[in-house]
Length: 82
Image (tube, rainbow, N blue to C red; front, side, top):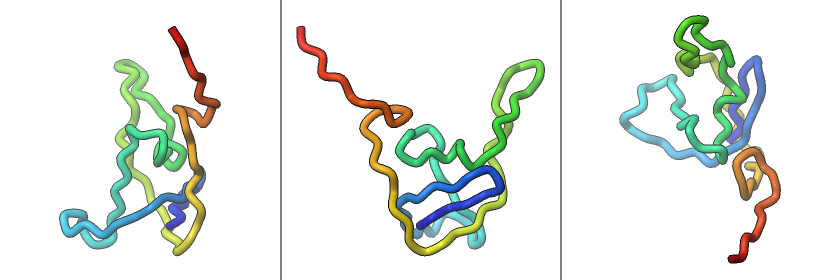
């Protein structure tokens, strides 16, 4: 599916989960593969520097091609030998 907000859009694989309320979408934002932070507000609390609660309106569209990333941020993976 493609998930789109006013701030951006991402394509990812989806599954139905009975624990998520009807009309709601949950995307774990801790994983670079999902890139959910591209959809939400980047604002920080001015005192604690804690990210704003990850909540925003989105539109779902059928289809889309998930971006295949091999590293955080999509950079090239480096082979390290000892």
